[in-house]
Length: 436
Image (cartoon, rainbow, N blue to C red):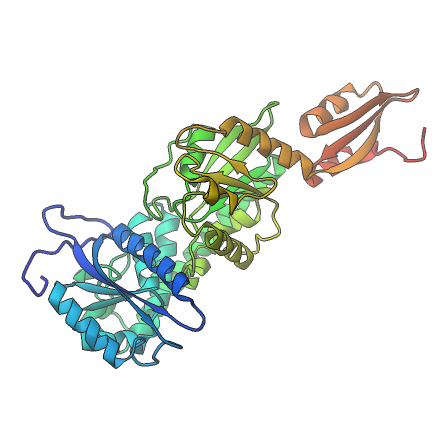
Protein backbone atom coordinates (compact mmCIF):
# COMPACT_ATOMS: atom_id res chain seq x y z
CA UNK A 1 0.00 0.00 0.00
CA UNK A 2 1.20 3.54 -0.71
CA UNK A 3 1.31 6.37 1.82
CA UNK A 4 -2.17 7.55 0.81
CA UNK A 5 -3.56 4.05 1.26
CA UNK A 6 -4.53 3.55 -2.37
CA UNK A 7 -4.24 0.08 -3.85
CA UNK A 8 -1.20 0.48 -6.10
CA UNK A 9 -0.61 -1.96 -8.93
CA UNK A 10 2.42 -4.10 -8.22
CA UNK A 11 3.42 -5.70 -11.51
CA UNK A 12 5.31 -8.95 -11.54
CA UNK A 13 6.73 -11.00 -14.38
CA UNK A 14 3.82 -13.44 -14.09
CA UNK A 15 0.83 -11.50 -12.78
CA UNK A 16 -0.87 -8.18 -13.44
CA UNK A 17 -3.83 -7.00 -11.38
CA UNK A 18 -5.87 -4.70 -13.61
CA UNK A 19 -8.19 -3.65 -10.78
CA UNK A 20 -5.60 -1.39 -9.16
CA UNK A 21 -3.71 1.70 -10.28
CA UNK A 22 -0.20 2.00 -11.66
CA UNK A 23 2.67 3.26 -9.54
CA UNK A 24 3.44 6.97 -9.60
CA UNK A 25 7.06 7.81 -10.37
CA UNK A 26 9.33 10.83 -10.22
CA UNK A 27 12.38 10.75 -12.52
CA UNK A 28 15.69 12.47 -11.81
CA UNK A 29 18.45 13.35 -14.27
CA UNK A 30 21.78 15.07 -13.71
CA UNK A 31 23.77 17.14 -16.20
CA UNK A 32 27.50 16.96 -15.42
CA UNK A 33 30.81 17.89 -17.00
CA UNK A 34 30.61 14.61 -18.93
CA UNK A 35 26.94 14.92 -19.91
CA UNK A 36 25.52 18.13 -21.35
CA UNK A 37 22.08 19.48 -20.47
CA UNK A 38 20.85 18.56 -23.94
CA UNK A 39 22.10 14.98 -23.55
CA UNK A 40 20.56 14.85 -20.07
CA UNK A 41 17.16 16.02 -21.35
CA UNK A 42 17.23 13.48 -24.19
CA UNK A 43 18.20 10.65 -21.85
CA UNK A 44 15.52 11.68 -19.35
CA UNK A 45 12.89 11.59 -22.09
CA UNK A 46 13.96 8.03 -22.84
CA UNK A 47 13.81 7.20 -19.12
CA UNK A 48 10.18 8.34 -19.06
CA UNK A 49 9.40 5.83 -21.83
CA UNK A 50 11.24 3.11 -19.91
CA UNK A 51 9.22 3.87 -16.76
CA UNK A 52 5.99 3.66 -18.76
CA UNK A 53 7.10 0.33 -20.24
CA UNK A 54 7.90 -0.96 -16.74
CA UNK A 55 4.38 -0.15 -15.55
CA UNK A 56 4.39 3.25 -13.83
CA UNK A 57 3.28 6.81 -14.63
CA UNK A 58 5.74 9.69 -14.43
CA UNK A 59 4.21 12.64 -12.56
CA UNK A 60 7.28 14.88 -12.32
CA UNK A 61 10.79 15.33 -13.71
CA UNK A 62 13.75 16.82 -11.86
CA UNK A 63 16.93 17.91 -13.60
CA UNK A 64 20.04 19.02 -11.74
CA UNK A 65 23.30 20.51 -13.01
CA UNK A 66 26.51 19.80 -11.09
CA UNK A 67 30.15 19.08 -11.93
CA UNK A 68 29.97 15.45 -10.86
CA UNK A 69 27.55 13.17 -8.95
CA UNK A 70 27.67 13.46 -5.16
CA UNK A 71 29.45 10.37 -3.73
CA UNK A 72 26.90 9.84 -0.93
CA UNK A 73 23.53 10.88 -2.36
CA UNK A 74 24.23 11.38 -6.10
CA UNK A 75 22.33 14.71 -6.10
CA UNK A 76 23.58 16.20 -2.83
CA UNK A 77 21.73 16.47 0.49
CA UNK A 78 19.98 19.76 -0.36
CA UNK A 79 18.58 18.48 -3.64
CA UNK A 80 17.60 15.22 -1.97
CA UNK A 81 15.48 17.18 0.52
CA UNK A 82 13.81 19.05 -2.36
CA UNK A 83 12.99 15.74 -4.03
CA UNK A 84 11.61 14.42 -0.74
CA UNK A 85 9.17 17.35 -0.51
CA UNK A 86 8.07 16.70 -4.10
CA UNK A 87 7.49 13.00 -3.46
CA UNK A 88 5.35 13.80 -0.44
CA UNK A 89 3.37 16.50 -2.23
CA UNK A 90 2.73 14.30 -5.28
CA UNK A 91 2.28 11.05 -3.32
CA UNK A 92 5.03 9.40 -5.38
CA UNK A 93 5.66 5.66 -4.98
CA UNK A 94 9.10 5.39 -6.59
CA UNK A 95 11.92 7.75 -7.58
CA UNK A 96 13.88 6.66 -10.66
CA UNK A 97 17.39 7.99 -11.31
CA UNK A 98 18.75 8.21 -14.85
CA UNK A 99 22.06 6.59 -13.98
CA UNK A 100 23.39 3.58 -12.10
CA UNK A 101 23.56 4.37 -8.40
CA UNK A 102 26.23 2.97 -6.12
CA UNK A 103 24.81 0.73 -3.37
CA UNK A 104 25.53 3.31 -0.66
CA UNK A 105 23.93 6.09 -2.75
CA UNK A 106 20.76 4.06 -3.15
CA UNK A 107 20.55 3.21 0.57
CA UNK A 108 21.15 6.83 1.60
CA UNK A 109 18.53 8.13 -0.82
CA UNK A 110 15.92 5.65 0.39
CA UNK A 111 16.51 6.77 3.98
CA UNK A 112 16.12 10.43 3.01
CA UNK A 113 13.22 10.10 0.55
CA UNK A 114 11.37 7.45 2.56
CA UNK A 115 10.20 5.69 -0.61
CA UNK A 116 11.53 3.22 -3.17
CA UNK A 117 14.57 4.35 -5.17
CA UNK A 118 15.39 2.67 -8.48
CA UNK A 119 18.24 3.43 -10.88
CA UNK A 120 18.34 3.14 -14.66
CA UNK A 121 20.00 -0.29 -14.58
CA UNK A 122 17.41 -1.84 -12.25
CA UNK A 123 14.63 -0.35 -14.37
CA UNK A 124 15.96 -1.94 -17.57
CA UNK A 125 16.50 -5.27 -15.82
CA UNK A 126 12.91 -5.08 -14.59
CA UNK A 127 11.61 -4.57 -18.14
CA UNK A 128 13.68 -7.49 -19.41
CA UNK A 129 12.24 -9.65 -16.61
CA UNK A 130 8.72 -8.86 -17.81
CA UNK A 131 9.45 -9.60 -21.47
CA UNK A 132 11.59 -12.75 -21.21
CA UNK A 133 9.51 -15.71 -22.36
CA UNK A 134 11.98 -18.41 -23.46
CA UNK A 135 14.08 -20.53 -21.13
CA UNK A 136 17.29 -18.89 -22.33
CA UNK A 137 15.86 -15.39 -21.95
CA UNK A 138 14.68 -16.01 -18.39
CA UNK A 139 18.02 -17.54 -17.38
CA UNK A 140 19.90 -14.58 -18.87
CA UNK A 141 17.73 -12.03 -17.11
CA UNK A 142 17.89 -13.78 -13.74
CA UNK A 143 21.68 -13.97 -13.93
CA UNK A 144 21.90 -10.28 -14.83
CA UNK A 145 19.62 -9.37 -11.91
CA UNK A 146 21.67 -11.39 -9.41
CA UNK A 147 24.90 -9.81 -10.65
CA UNK A 148 23.34 -6.39 -10.14
CA UNK A 149 21.89 -7.15 -6.71
CA UNK A 150 24.87 -8.99 -5.25
CA UNK A 151 26.78 -5.85 -4.12
CA UNK A 152 23.52 -4.34 -2.83
CA UNK A 153 22.72 -7.05 -0.28
CA UNK A 154 24.40 -5.47 2.72
CA UNK A 155 21.87 -3.94 5.10
CA UNK A 156 18.90 -4.23 2.73
CA UNK A 157 16.82 -7.07 4.11
CA UNK A 158 13.18 -6.93 3.02
CA UNK A 159 13.79 -4.08 0.57
CA UNK A 160 15.25 -6.53 -1.92
CA UNK A 161 12.41 -9.02 -1.59
CA UNK A 162 10.78 -9.81 -4.91
CA UNK A 163 7.62 -10.48 -2.93
CA UNK A 164 7.38 -6.75 -2.33
CA UNK A 165 6.67 -6.10 -6.01
CA UNK A 166 7.16 -2.84 -7.83
CA UNK A 167 9.69 -1.56 -10.32
CA UNK A 168 13.19 -2.94 -9.83
CA UNK A 169 12.16 -5.79 -7.55
CA UNK A 170 10.36 -8.23 -9.82
CA UNK A 171 11.78 -11.10 -11.80
CA UNK A 172 12.51 -14.82 -11.70
CA UNK A 173 14.53 -16.45 -8.95
CA UNK A 174 14.49 -16.69 -5.18
CA UNK A 175 13.58 -13.77 -2.92
CA UNK A 176 16.84 -12.14 -1.97
CA UNK A 177 16.02 -11.47 1.69
CA UNK A 178 15.89 -15.23 2.29
CA UNK A 179 19.31 -16.05 0.93
CA UNK A 180 22.83 -15.17 1.88
CA UNK A 181 25.75 -14.44 -0.40
CA UNK A 182 26.81 -18.07 -0.53
CA UNK A 183 23.43 -19.25 -1.79
CA UNK A 184 23.30 -16.44 -4.35
CA UNK A 185 26.74 -17.40 -5.65
CA UNK A 186 25.54 -20.99 -5.88
CA UNK A 187 22.50 -19.91 -7.86
CA UNK A 188 24.64 -17.75 -10.14
CA UNK A 189 26.95 -20.70 -10.79
CA UNK A 190 23.93 -22.85 -11.70
CA UNK A 191 22.67 -20.19 -14.11
CA UNK A 192 26.11 -19.79 -15.69
CA UNK A 193 26.33 -23.56 -16.28
CA UNK A 194 22.86 -23.52 -17.83
CA UNK A 195 23.85 -20.61 -20.08
CA UNK A 196 27.00 -22.46 -21.12
CA UNK A 197 24.86 -25.44 -22.11
CA UNK A 198 22.48 -23.24 -24.08
CA UNK A 199 25.42 -21.44 -25.68
CA UNK A 200 26.88 -24.76 -26.87
CA UNK A 201 23.53 -25.66 -28.39
CA UNK A 202 23.35 -22.27 -30.11
CA UNK A 203 26.92 -22.70 -31.36
CA UNK A 204 26.07 -26.12 -32.83
CA UNK A 205 23.07 -24.64 -34.60
CA UNK A 206 25.22 -21.80 -35.91
CA UNK A 207 27.82 -24.24 -37.30
CA UNK A 208 25.05 -26.23 -38.99
CA UNK A 209 23.85 -23.05 -40.69
CA UNK A 210 27.40 -22.27 -41.80
CA UNK A 211 27.77 -25.75 -43.30
CA UNK A 212 24.53 -25.25 -45.19
CA UNK A 213 26.14 -22.16 -46.74
CA UNK A 214 22.99 -20.08 -46.19
CA UNK A 215 23.95 -16.44 -45.49
CA UNK A 216 22.75 -14.97 -42.20
CA UNK A 217 21.44 -11.42 -41.99
CA UNK A 218 20.89 -9.86 -38.54
CA UNK A 219 18.57 -6.94 -37.86
CA UNK A 220 20.12 -4.63 -35.29
CA UNK A 221 19.21 -1.18 -34.06
CA UNK A 222 18.01 0.95 -31.22
CA UNK A 223 15.03 -0.35 -29.28
CA UNK A 224 11.69 0.52 -30.87
CA UNK A 225 13.28 1.33 -34.24
CA UNK A 226 10.88 -1.09 -35.94
CA UNK A 227 13.06 -4.17 -36.44
CA UNK A 228 10.30 -6.67 -35.65
CA UNK A 229 7.81 -4.88 -37.91
CA UNK A 230 10.38 -4.97 -40.71
CA UNK A 231 11.05 -8.69 -40.15
CA UNK A 232 7.32 -9.39 -40.26
CA UNK A 233 7.02 -7.44 -43.49
CA UNK A 234 9.83 -9.13 -45.43
CA UNK A 235 9.44 -12.71 -44.14
CA UNK A 236 5.73 -12.94 -43.22
CA UNK A 237 6.84 -13.73 -39.67
CA UNK A 238 4.46 -13.27 -36.75
CA UNK A 239 6.72 -11.55 -34.24
CA UNK A 240 4.96 -9.60 -31.47
CA UNK A 241 5.01 -5.87 -32.20
CA UNK A 242 4.20 -2.99 -29.85
CA UNK A 243 5.11 0.68 -29.87
CA UNK A 244 7.14 0.38 -26.68
CA UNK A 245 10.76 -0.10 -25.72
CA UNK A 246 11.99 -3.72 -25.63
CA UNK A 247 8.64 -5.19 -26.72
CA UNK A 248 10.68 -7.96 -28.39
CA UNK A 249 13.38 -9.62 -26.30
CA UNK A 250 13.88 -13.18 -27.52
CA UNK A 251 15.60 -13.53 -30.94
CA UNK A 252 13.61 -14.79 -33.93
CA UNK A 253 15.04 -16.24 -37.17
CA UNK A 254 13.09 -16.64 -40.40
CA UNK A 255 13.94 -17.58 -44.00
CA UNK A 256 13.95 -14.79 -46.58
CA UNK A 257 13.86 -15.42 -50.32
CA UNK A 258 15.77 -12.77 -52.27
CA UNK A 259 15.15 -11.82 -55.91
CA UNK A 260 16.80 -14.48 -58.07
CA UNK A 261 15.92 -17.27 -55.68
CA UNK A 262 18.77 -16.94 -53.15
CA UNK A 263 17.74 -17.95 -49.65
CA UNK A 264 19.05 -16.19 -46.52
CA UNK A 265 18.28 -16.44 -42.81
CA UNK A 266 17.07 -13.19 -41.27
CA UNK A 267 17.30 -12.76 -37.48
CA UNK A 268 15.63 -10.18 -35.28
CA UNK A 269 17.66 -9.31 -32.17
CA UNK A 270 17.07 -7.48 -28.91
CA UNK A 271 17.09 -3.71 -29.28
CA UNK A 272 20.07 -1.73 -28.07
CA UNK A 273 20.06 1.26 -25.75
CA UNK A 274 22.36 4.00 -24.53
CA UNK A 275 24.18 2.83 -21.43
CA UNK A 276 22.85 -0.70 -21.80
CA UNK A 277 23.66 -2.36 -18.44
CA UNK A 278 26.88 -4.33 -18.62
CA UNK A 279 25.20 -7.10 -16.61
CA UNK A 280 22.79 -7.61 -19.51
CA UNK A 281 25.53 -7.50 -22.14
CA UNK A 282 27.43 -10.19 -20.25
CA UNK A 283 24.37 -12.36 -19.61
CA UNK A 284 23.13 -12.05 -23.22
CA UNK A 285 26.57 -12.57 -24.74
CA UNK A 286 25.72 -15.96 -26.25
CA UNK A 287 22.64 -14.48 -27.88
CA UNK A 288 24.51 -11.41 -29.09
CA UNK A 289 27.18 -13.65 -30.61
CA UNK A 290 24.59 -14.40 -33.28
CA UNK A 291 25.04 -10.80 -34.39
CA UNK A 292 28.83 -11.08 -34.52
CA UNK A 293 28.57 -14.29 -36.58
CA UNK A 294 26.21 -12.80 -39.18
CA UNK A 295 27.29 -12.19 -42.76
CA UNK A 296 25.51 -8.84 -42.88
CA UNK A 297 23.98 -6.45 -40.35
CA UNK A 298 20.84 -4.53 -41.23
CA UNK A 299 21.07 -1.44 -39.04
CA UNK A 300 17.49 -0.18 -38.64
CA UNK A 301 17.28 3.50 -37.69
CA UNK A 302 14.15 5.30 -36.48
CA UNK A 303 13.96 8.37 -38.73
CA UNK A 304 11.40 10.01 -36.43
CA UNK A 305 13.59 9.83 -33.32
CA UNK A 306 14.64 13.34 -32.20
CA UNK A 307 18.13 12.09 -31.34
CA UNK A 308 18.64 9.52 -34.11
CA UNK A 309 22.39 10.32 -34.57
CA UNK A 310 22.99 9.59 -30.87
CA UNK A 311 21.05 6.33 -31.21
CA UNK A 312 23.23 5.30 -34.16
CA UNK A 313 26.36 5.95 -32.06
CA UNK A 314 24.90 3.93 -29.18
CA UNK A 315 24.26 0.96 -31.46
CA UNK A 316 27.82 1.11 -32.83
CA UNK A 317 29.22 1.17 -29.27
CA UNK A 318 27.32 -2.00 -28.37
CA UNK A 319 28.38 -3.67 -31.63
CA UNK A 320 31.99 -2.91 -30.80
CA UNK A 321 31.56 -4.29 -27.28
CA UNK A 322 30.30 -7.63 -28.60
CA UNK A 323 32.89 -7.85 -31.40
CA UNK A 324 30.45 -7.20 -34.25
CA UNK A 325 31.82 -3.84 -35.38
CA UNK A 326 33.68 -5.42 -38.33
CA UNK A 327 30.59 -7.13 -39.79
CA UNK A 328 29.43 -5.38 -43.01
CA UNK A 329 26.46 -3.09 -42.41
CA UNK A 330 23.52 -1.91 -44.51
CA UNK A 331 21.67 1.05 -43.00
CA UNK A 332 17.89 1.21 -43.33
CA UNK A 333 16.04 4.37 -42.33
CA UNK A 334 12.61 3.29 -41.09
CA UNK A 335 9.42 5.21 -40.19
CA UNK A 336 9.80 7.74 -43.01
CA UNK A 337 6.01 8.07 -42.98
CA UNK A 338 6.17 9.98 -39.67
CA UNK A 339 9.56 11.71 -40.05
CA UNK A 340 10.23 15.08 -41.60
CA UNK A 341 12.83 15.56 -44.40
CA UNK A 342 15.34 17.26 -42.09
CA UNK A 343 15.32 14.28 -39.73
CA UNK A 344 15.98 11.91 -42.62
CA UNK A 345 18.79 14.02 -44.10
CA UNK A 346 20.79 14.13 -40.87
CA UNK A 347 21.09 10.33 -40.71
CA UNK A 348 21.13 9.39 -44.38
CA UNK A 349 24.36 8.04 -45.90
CA UNK A 350 25.14 7.34 -49.53
CA UNK A 351 23.98 3.71 -49.32
CA UNK A 352 21.13 4.11 -46.82
CA UNK A 353 17.64 3.01 -47.81
CA UNK A 354 14.45 4.78 -46.74
CA UNK A 355 11.47 2.57 -45.89
CA UNK A 356 8.27 2.47 -43.94
CA UNK A 357 7.75 -1.04 -42.62
CA UNK A 358 4.34 0.00 -41.28
CA UNK A 359 3.08 1.30 -44.65
CA UNK A 360 5.03 -1.18 -46.80
CA UNK A 361 6.98 1.58 -48.57
CA UNK A 362 10.36 0.80 -50.16
CA UNK A 363 10.31 -2.84 -49.03
CA UNK A 364 10.95 -4.40 -52.45
CA UNK A 365 13.94 -2.12 -53.04
CA UNK A 366 15.22 -2.96 -49.56
CA UNK A 367 15.03 -6.74 -50.13
CA UNK A 368 16.86 -6.34 -53.46
CA UNK A 369 19.54 -4.27 -51.72
CA UNK A 370 20.20 -7.13 -49.27
CA UNK A 371 21.02 -9.43 -52.19
CA UNK A 372 23.18 -6.77 -53.86
CA UNK A 373 25.08 -6.13 -50.64
CA UNK A 374 25.71 -9.82 -49.99
CA UNK A 375 26.99 -10.34 -53.54
CA UNK A 376 29.28 -7.32 -53.27
CA UNK A 377 30.96 -8.86 -50.22
CA UNK A 378 32.19 -11.90 -52.13
CA UNK A 379 35.66 -12.27 -53.60
CA UNK A 380 35.96 -12.32 -57.40
CA UNK A 381 37.73 -15.46 -58.65
CA UNK A 382 38.21 -17.02 -62.06
CA UNK A 383 37.57 -20.69 -62.78
CA UNK A 384 38.22 -22.92 -65.78
CA UNK A 385 35.59 -25.65 -65.91
CA UNK A 386 35.76 -28.58 -68.40
CA UNK A 387 32.78 -28.81 -70.72
CA UNK A 388 31.78 -32.18 -69.29
CA UNK A 389 31.29 -30.55 -65.86
CA UNK A 390 28.16 -28.62 -66.64
CA UNK A 391 26.98 -29.33 -63.09
CA UNK A 392 29.81 -27.13 -61.75
CA UNK A 393 28.75 -24.23 -63.99
CA UNK A 394 25.18 -24.57 -62.77
CA UNK A 395 26.38 -24.67 -59.16
CA UNK A 396 28.49 -21.53 -59.63
CA UNK A 397 25.42 -19.72 -60.92
CA UNK A 398 23.48 -20.80 -57.82
CA UNK A 399 26.14 -20.03 -55.24
CA UNK A 400 27.58 -16.80 -56.59
CA UNK A 401 27.25 -13.95 -59.04
CA UNK A 402 28.66 -14.87 -62.47
CA UNK A 403 30.24 -11.74 -63.93
CA UNK A 404 31.85 -13.14 -67.09
CA UNK A 405 31.42 -16.48 -68.87
CA UNK A 406 33.66 -17.23 -71.90
CA UNK A 407 33.99 -20.49 -73.85
CA UNK A 408 37.51 -21.58 -74.84
CA UNK A 409 39.09 -24.63 -76.47
CA UNK A 410 39.55 -26.44 -73.14
CA UNK A 411 36.48 -25.43 -71.24
CA UNK A 412 34.36 -22.59 -69.87
CA UNK A 413 36.23 -19.74 -68.21
CA UNK A 414 34.01 -18.16 -65.56
CA UNK A 415 34.63 -15.10 -63.40
CA UNK A 416 32.45 -15.32 -60.28
CA UNK A 417 31.90 -13.33 -57.11
CA UNK A 418 31.73 -15.89 -54.32
CA UNK A 419 31.42 -15.86 -50.55
CA UNK A 420 34.65 -16.94 -48.83
CA UNK A 421 32.93 -20.03 -47.41
CA UNK A 422 32.27 -21.25 -50.97
CA UNK A 423 35.83 -21.03 -52.31
CA UNK A 424 37.00 -24.46 -51.17
CA UNK A 425 34.20 -26.21 -53.08
CA UNK A 426 35.66 -25.09 -56.41
CA UNK A 427 39.38 -24.98 -55.62
CA UNK A 428 40.26 -27.65 -58.23
CA UNK A 429 38.82 -25.43 -60.98
CA UNK A 430 40.73 -22.23 -60.20
CA UNK A 431 42.08 -20.93 -63.49
CA UNK A 432 45.73 -20.25 -64.19
CA UNK A 433 45.87 -16.49 -64.89
CA UNK A 434 48.59 -17.06 -67.51
CA UNK A 435 46.49 -19.55 -69.44
CA UNK A 436 44.72 -18.33 -72.52
